[in-house]
Length: 440
Image 1 (cartoon, rainbow, N blue to C red):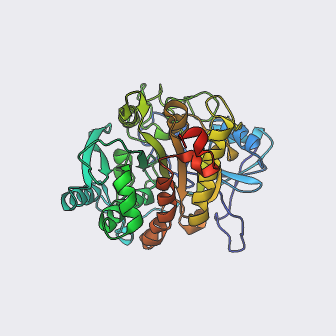
Image 2: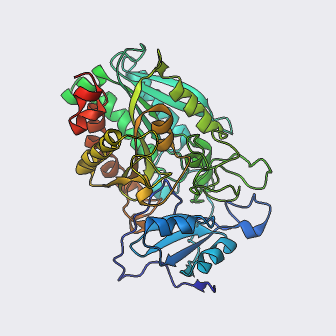
Image 3: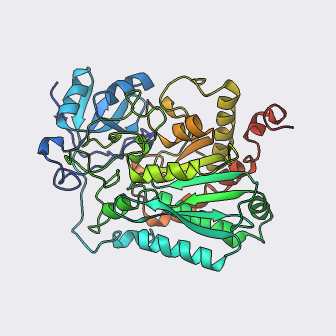
């Protein structure tokens, strides 16, 4: 099917709302001369396309089965990142495929965020924030290094609790950030939470009570290599994956959020092609970042019981609260009872009430496999959620919103996070069944 070349992407009269989920792939991707300069063949370069026609989760999954990655979802269209061959395959499904122009890029500058977005924290600045928080609040904050990235950067974890240096018998909470490199607002979410929990302990009654009765683990950047690469030229490279070469060295990068071991590669929700933005790697946990975090989570099993009860994995964008499973459309798939599904849904809806996001099961968008949420629940029994943060569509900046939004869009999730912490002792309380599941 012929592929049309579009006029500029946004028109002033457009009122369509993108429901974009960065479990998935960003709208703006680089050309062969940029992020994919390290691929062996130019025909593996990624281009952007609008696909008119897919309107259901099943039809969107049919699109991803070609190897294309969905960026954003509209009522009767999707935006994809794909090679020309993949785009042609999508067209062969009978959909109208329109090639979109490449994004404008700025001249190269020093290795950091563009000056107009200097409010974002690079990895060195993030490390300084973590070290300062721990130094200023030694009783309630403790830093640990749980592993290294492919390029050797520390994977940091910060424990927050009233006795941070002691492993107490308290429910634990896992908050992870920046699996996908270009989703820099999620790092700012971690910074906000670190400063809020430590700065308001002792003065805010609710936060004080929660830190006195919970152990909170914040992992502020799971993909530091990718984050640094994304801004290394002083303008954005639109990079998603880590920086680990494929076994054949044909391309760099594994999509960390397709590399988790539960139902890895099972269901057409990831790619086996190394140049794909959703490349799942040669095996589950083959990415060192995923392996390190998975080992950390498994290490929280004490006397046969997982201490972490609930968790949020922060992404951008789309303003969504998602819960497992992503690999199947079914609610009560193996490992998920009706009560467990209902608990996920009730907690997701509760959190969405305060932040204004849309709550839904992950596969309501389309099928994904090898995600952290499916692994946390399916392998470890942790009630887990993905937050797709601001904006709701590409109109608000897509994966690169201006730094002016950081205070409002991080504090927007304050109540939602606290609501989940409230339920960490007994998540099933959200459906009124604490007596059945939590001993009364």
